Every structure is written in C-alpha cells, then in structure tokens.
Amino acid sequence: AQSVTQPDIHITVSEGASLELRCNYSYGATPYLFWYVQSPGQGLQLLLKYFSGDTLVQGIKGFEAEFKRSQSSFNLRKPSVHWSDAAEYFCAVGAEEYGNKLVFGAGTILRVKS
Amino acid sequence: EAQVTQNPRYLITVTGKKLTVTCSQNMNHEYMSWYRQDPGLGLRQIYYSMNVEVTDKGDVPEGYKVSRKEKRNFPLILESPSPNQTSLYFCASSLANSGRVFFGQGTRLTVV
Image (tube, rainbow over all chains, first blue to last red):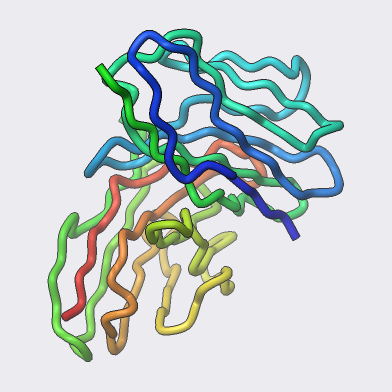
C-alpha cells in the first residue's frame, strides 16, 4: 500500500529566505505525486504534480519540486518565501493501479517570520 | 466553470441526528470520493465511486454511507453522527485514471 511521510509538522522561515518541505513516499512503482496548499479556512489548492518525464516540476506561486526515485522523495522548494505563503502543505501520492485514490501526508504547517 | 460543489459549507449538529452532505460535479467525471481531514492525520479517504451504482470503502468508512444514483452527485450520509466525526470533509472527482483530482471547498462538520 502507498504511504506518505512529511517529517516536519511545523516549519518557520523568515520572509525572503529559501524553503524546502520534505516528502517521502512508499510505493513500488512510479507513483503520481502532488503538492497541495491549504490556507487557513480554505480548501485545497494544487501547487504542482508529477506523473512522468522531467523530474524537476514547476508549479504555481514560484514553487518547484524534484522527484528523486532513489530516495523516494518529492521535496517542495521555493527560493524566496513571502508572508502570503504561510499555510499548511500536503504531499500526496496516487497510482494508476489504485484508481484515483490519493494518499496524503499529515501536512506541514509553514509559518513565515517578518 | 469546472467545479465540485459541496453543501453545506458549515454544519453543527447533535449526536444521533441523521445528516447528508451533498456533492455535485459538472465535469462528467466517473470517479468521485470523499475524504476527511483531521489535524496531524492529513486527508483520509472515506468512500469512493468508480461510476454510477458502483461504490466501495476507502480507509475510514465506519459510520458513513454513500450513494451514486447519478453520475454528477455523490452524497455523504451520516446515519447517526457522533462527536468523533467532527472533521473537515472534502469531496473530490476526476476522470478515470487521469490523476487530476478536483476538490470541493470542504464542509466543516461539528457534532456535539
């Protein structure tokens, strides 16, 4: 079965600093990988996704993520964080053999210091 | 506009009083599902449906029912809600095996 681990429950960064949120997954074949963001009181917004091909994926709001098969990781990065990036971030994994089910990590809450 | 619509957005109810959360999508998607979101646990799948009249349990189905009588609608039914079902609920839809999942805006349910 698929599983997703986000090791960091909370992360605090200063505005303008770089950001990396970690995500590790467990799945035998090549999964579909996603990052979602949820602002307080809001729904889920898709930041980026990886299905196949180039392992460095560009998303919205200046985010990118890199799929590393050897490390079973899909870490999310942003070179310069803005105060409006404060939110909760979820990594999720899907797979063709599991239909359209997504398995989510527990989430990482990002705080931005001014 | 392509969307998944859930109603209500907020609901406070009492233990044991049956309720239904509706979900509708306008994209002719075959696949629909329900998730619940709890702090520290992320989102977990409750039930899913591969097409009309085809439903199956997800990871946390206890205490919930669903039906899929029409392709566009996938209501979530709590026959006898309990406080441990207090949560944020999301409906989702997608084309079969597309990997592109659309989420509703969420329903915040409180059971007292």
